Length: 253
Image (cartoon, rainbow, N blue to C red; front, side, top):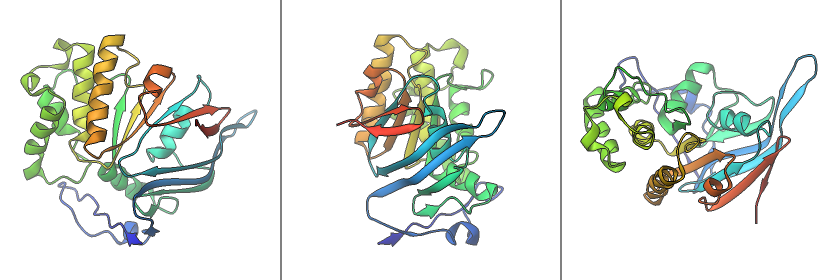
Protein backbone atom coordinates (compact mmCIF):
# COMPACT_ATOMS: atom_id res chain seq x y z
CA UNK A 1 0.00 0.00 0.00
CA UNK A 2 1.21 3.49 -0.80
CA UNK A 3 0.21 7.00 0.11
CA UNK A 4 -0.10 9.51 -2.71
CA UNK A 5 1.41 12.87 -1.76
CA UNK A 6 0.11 15.95 -3.43
CA UNK A 7 1.78 19.32 -3.68
CA UNK A 8 -0.51 22.34 -3.65
CA UNK A 9 -0.43 25.40 -5.84
CA UNK A 10 1.23 28.50 -4.53
CA UNK A 11 0.14 31.92 -5.84
CA UNK A 12 2.88 31.97 -8.51
CA UNK A 13 2.09 28.47 -9.69
CA UNK A 14 5.04 26.69 -8.03
CA UNK A 15 4.68 23.65 -5.83
CA UNK A 16 4.91 23.78 -2.07
CA UNK A 17 4.11 21.79 1.08
CA UNK A 18 0.52 21.41 2.16
CA UNK A 19 -0.23 19.73 5.46
CA UNK A 20 -4.01 20.09 5.03
CA UNK A 21 -4.12 17.91 1.93
CA UNK A 22 -1.47 15.45 3.10
CA UNK A 23 -3.33 14.96 6.36
CA UNK A 24 -6.18 13.46 4.34
CA UNK A 25 -3.92 11.10 2.37
CA UNK A 26 -4.86 7.46 2.88
CA UNK A 27 -3.29 4.10 2.12
CA UNK A 28 -4.29 3.24 -1.42
CA UNK A 29 -4.35 -0.07 -3.26
CA UNK A 30 -1.90 -0.11 -6.19
CA UNK A 31 -3.58 0.86 -9.43
CA UNK A 32 -6.63 2.53 -7.86
CA UNK A 33 -6.97 6.13 -8.97
CA UNK A 34 -10.38 7.08 -7.58
CA UNK A 35 -13.11 5.42 -5.56
CA UNK A 36 -16.68 6.34 -4.67
CA UNK A 37 -18.26 4.37 -1.86
CA UNK A 38 -21.96 4.65 -1.05
CA UNK A 39 -22.19 8.12 -2.60
CA UNK A 40 -25.59 9.81 -2.68
CA UNK A 41 -26.44 13.40 -3.54
CA UNK A 42 -29.76 15.00 -2.75
CA UNK A 43 -31.07 18.48 -3.48
CA UNK A 44 -33.61 19.99 -1.16
CA UNK A 45 -36.54 22.11 -2.25
CA UNK A 46 -40.30 21.84 -2.31
CA UNK A 47 -39.63 18.19 -3.12
CA UNK A 48 -36.30 16.56 -2.29
CA UNK A 49 -34.54 15.22 -5.38
CA UNK A 50 -32.14 12.31 -4.97
CA UNK A 51 -29.80 12.74 -7.94
CA UNK A 52 -27.32 10.02 -6.95
CA UNK A 53 -28.32 6.88 -5.08
CA UNK A 54 -25.72 4.81 -3.22
CA UNK A 55 -23.12 4.87 -6.01
CA UNK A 56 -20.06 2.63 -5.80
CA UNK A 57 -17.34 3.07 -8.43
CA UNK A 58 -13.64 2.30 -8.64
CA UNK A 59 -11.54 3.94 -11.36
CA UNK A 60 -8.16 2.39 -12.04
CA UNK A 61 -5.06 4.01 -13.47
CA UNK A 62 -5.33 3.93 -17.26
CA UNK A 63 -9.06 3.16 -17.19
CA UNK A 64 -11.38 4.19 -20.00
CA UNK A 65 -15.02 4.16 -19.00
CA UNK A 66 -18.25 5.75 -20.14
CA UNK A 67 -21.36 6.74 -18.22
CA UNK A 68 -24.49 6.86 -20.37
CA UNK A 69 -28.03 7.81 -19.55
CA UNK A 70 -30.93 10.07 -20.52
CA UNK A 71 -31.37 13.65 -19.35
CA UNK A 72 -32.14 13.77 -15.64
CA UNK A 73 -30.57 10.38 -14.92
CA UNK A 74 -27.82 11.83 -12.70
CA UNK A 75 -24.93 11.94 -15.18
CA UNK A 76 -24.10 15.60 -14.61
CA UNK A 77 -24.29 15.21 -10.84
CA UNK A 78 -21.98 12.22 -11.12
CA UNK A 79 -19.49 14.23 -13.17
CA UNK A 80 -19.62 17.10 -10.69
CA UNK A 81 -18.88 14.71 -7.85
CA UNK A 82 -15.94 13.12 -9.68
CA UNK A 83 -14.64 16.55 -10.62
CA UNK A 84 -14.76 17.89 -7.05
CA UNK A 85 -17.25 20.50 -8.22
CA UNK A 86 -19.86 19.25 -5.76
CA UNK A 87 -19.83 17.35 -2.48
CA UNK A 88 -21.78 14.14 -1.86
CA UNK A 89 -24.56 14.35 0.70
CA UNK A 90 -23.65 10.87 1.90
CA UNK A 91 -20.69 8.60 1.17
CA UNK A 92 -16.97 8.81 0.53
CA UNK A 93 -14.91 9.95 -2.45
CA UNK A 94 -11.19 9.25 -2.56
CA UNK A 95 -9.02 10.70 -5.33
CA UNK A 96 -5.34 9.76 -5.67
CA UNK A 97 -5.33 8.40 -2.14
CA UNK A 98 -6.91 11.51 -0.61
CA UNK A 99 -10.23 11.43 1.23
CA UNK A 100 -11.84 14.49 -0.34
CA UNK A 101 -14.66 14.75 2.22
CA UNK A 102 -12.82 16.71 4.95
CA UNK A 103 -10.97 18.99 2.52
CA UNK A 104 -11.78 22.72 2.62
CA UNK A 105 -12.65 24.33 -0.71
CA UNK A 106 -9.15 25.72 -1.25
CA UNK A 107 -7.56 22.28 -0.99
CA UNK A 108 -10.24 20.75 -3.21
CA UNK A 109 -9.36 23.35 -5.83
CA UNK A 110 -5.68 22.42 -5.58
CA UNK A 111 -6.38 18.72 -5.85
CA UNK A 112 -8.68 19.32 -8.82
CA UNK A 113 -6.04 21.39 -10.61
CA UNK A 114 -3.31 18.82 -10.08
CA UNK A 115 -5.16 15.60 -10.80
CA UNK A 116 -8.10 16.35 -13.09
CA UNK A 117 -8.61 17.61 -16.62
CA UNK A 118 -12.00 18.68 -18.02
CA UNK A 119 -13.42 18.65 -21.55
CA UNK A 120 -16.89 20.09 -22.18
CA UNK A 121 -19.42 19.98 -24.99
CA UNK A 122 -19.19 23.74 -25.49
CA UNK A 123 -15.36 23.90 -25.71
CA UNK A 124 -15.18 27.01 -23.44
CA UNK A 125 -12.26 28.58 -25.32
CA UNK A 126 -11.56 32.30 -25.01
CA UNK A 127 -12.25 33.83 -28.44
CA UNK A 128 -9.74 36.70 -28.07
CA UNK A 129 -6.87 34.42 -27.08
CA UNK A 130 -4.89 32.33 -29.51
CA UNK A 131 -4.94 28.54 -29.41
CA UNK A 132 -1.56 28.53 -27.66
CA UNK A 133 -2.69 31.12 -25.11
CA UNK A 134 -5.85 29.13 -24.35
CA UNK A 135 -3.77 26.05 -23.58
CA UNK A 136 -1.39 28.10 -21.42
CA UNK A 137 -4.28 29.50 -19.40
CA UNK A 138 -5.45 25.97 -18.67
CA UNK A 139 -2.39 25.52 -16.45
CA UNK A 140 -3.02 28.57 -14.28
CA UNK A 141 -4.39 26.43 -11.44
CA UNK A 142 -2.62 23.15 -12.12
CA UNK A 143 0.52 23.74 -10.09
CA UNK A 144 2.77 23.69 -13.16
CA UNK A 145 5.74 26.05 -12.64
CA UNK A 146 5.62 29.06 -14.96
CA UNK A 147 8.95 28.15 -16.53
CA UNK A 148 7.54 24.82 -17.74
CA UNK A 149 4.19 25.97 -19.08
CA UNK A 150 5.15 26.95 -22.63
CA UNK A 151 6.90 23.64 -23.25
CA UNK A 152 3.95 21.71 -21.86
CA UNK A 153 1.47 23.71 -23.96
CA UNK A 154 3.47 22.95 -27.08
CA UNK A 155 3.64 19.27 -26.18
CA UNK A 156 -0.10 19.09 -25.51
CA UNK A 157 -0.91 20.66 -28.89
CA UNK A 158 1.41 18.20 -30.58
CA UNK A 159 -0.37 15.28 -28.92
CA UNK A 160 -3.70 16.34 -30.45
CA UNK A 161 -2.16 17.31 -33.82
CA UNK A 162 -2.92 21.02 -33.48
CA UNK A 163 0.58 22.53 -33.51
CA UNK A 164 -0.10 24.09 -36.92
CA UNK A 165 -2.99 26.08 -35.43
CA UNK A 166 -1.14 27.44 -32.39
CA UNK A 167 -1.34 31.09 -33.51
CA UNK A 168 -4.96 30.90 -34.71
CA UNK A 169 -7.99 32.15 -32.81
CA UNK A 170 -10.78 29.72 -31.82
CA UNK A 171 -13.35 31.49 -34.01
CA UNK A 172 -11.35 30.51 -37.11
CA UNK A 173 -11.35 26.79 -36.25
CA UNK A 174 -13.80 24.02 -37.04
CA UNK A 175 -15.75 22.37 -34.25
CA UNK A 176 -13.46 19.36 -34.25
CA UNK A 177 -10.38 21.56 -34.09
CA UNK A 178 -11.79 23.54 -31.19
CA UNK A 179 -12.47 20.34 -29.29
CA UNK A 180 -8.90 19.19 -29.92
CA UNK A 181 -7.65 22.48 -28.47
CA UNK A 182 -9.95 21.99 -25.48
CA UNK A 183 -8.45 18.53 -24.97
CA UNK A 184 -4.93 19.97 -25.25
CA UNK A 185 -5.81 22.54 -22.59
CA UNK A 186 -7.14 19.78 -20.34
CA UNK A 187 -4.03 17.58 -20.62
CA UNK A 188 -1.33 20.27 -20.58
CA UNK A 189 -1.11 20.07 -16.79
CA UNK A 190 -0.62 16.30 -17.10
CA UNK A 191 -3.62 15.17 -15.02
CA UNK A 192 -4.15 11.55 -14.08
CA UNK A 193 -7.89 11.59 -14.87
CA UNK A 194 -9.66 13.27 -17.79
CA UNK A 195 -13.39 13.95 -17.39
CA UNK A 196 -15.23 14.54 -20.67
CA UNK A 197 -18.81 15.83 -20.61
CA UNK A 198 -20.57 15.11 -23.93
CA UNK A 199 -17.29 15.77 -25.81
CA UNK A 200 -18.89 15.08 -29.21
CA UNK A 201 -22.27 16.70 -28.53
CA UNK A 202 -21.66 19.61 -30.94
CA UNK A 203 -19.92 17.58 -33.64
CA UNK A 204 -20.98 15.60 -36.70
CA UNK A 205 -20.40 11.85 -36.90
CA UNK A 206 -17.08 11.98 -38.76
CA UNK A 207 -15.61 14.67 -36.49
CA UNK A 208 -16.91 12.83 -33.42
CA UNK A 209 -14.98 9.75 -34.51
CA UNK A 210 -11.80 11.84 -34.79
CA UNK A 211 -12.24 13.21 -31.27
CA UNK A 212 -12.85 9.71 -29.92
CA UNK A 213 -9.64 8.59 -31.64
CA UNK A 214 -7.77 11.34 -29.76
CA UNK A 215 -9.24 10.20 -26.44
CA UNK A 216 -8.33 6.60 -27.22
CA UNK A 217 -4.75 7.58 -28.05
CA UNK A 218 -4.42 9.53 -24.80
CA UNK A 219 -5.83 6.61 -22.88
CA UNK A 220 -3.40 4.29 -24.64
CA UNK A 221 -0.59 6.49 -23.32
CA UNK A 222 -1.81 5.91 -19.75
CA UNK A 223 -4.33 8.68 -19.09
CA UNK A 224 -7.53 7.53 -17.36
CA UNK A 225 -10.63 8.79 -19.19
CA UNK A 226 -14.26 9.07 -18.07
CA UNK A 227 -16.77 10.09 -20.74
CA UNK A 228 -20.30 11.15 -19.79
CA UNK A 229 -22.68 10.90 -22.74
CA UNK A 230 -26.17 10.09 -23.94
CA UNK A 231 -24.81 8.67 -27.22
CA UNK A 232 -24.54 4.85 -27.38
CA UNK A 233 -21.86 5.07 -30.11
CA UNK A 234 -19.67 7.28 -27.93
CA UNK A 235 -20.29 5.05 -24.94
CA UNK A 236 -19.34 1.90 -26.82
CA UNK A 237 -15.84 3.26 -27.49
CA UNK A 238 -14.98 2.80 -23.80
CA UNK A 239 -13.65 -0.46 -22.38
CA UNK A 240 -15.90 -0.22 -19.31
CA UNK A 241 -19.44 0.95 -19.90
CA UNK A 242 -21.92 2.13 -17.27
CA UNK A 243 -25.50 3.28 -17.46
CA UNK A 244 -27.31 5.69 -15.13
CA UNK A 245 -31.00 5.79 -14.44
CA UNK A 246 -32.77 7.52 -11.58
CA UNK A 247 -29.43 8.22 -9.92
CA UNK A 248 -28.31 4.59 -9.89
CA UNK A 249 -25.09 3.49 -11.60
CA UNK A 250 -24.81 0.06 -13.17
CA UNK A 251 -21.90 -1.49 -15.06
CA UNK A 252 -22.83 -3.22 -18.29
CA UNK A 253 -21.52 -6.78 -18.78
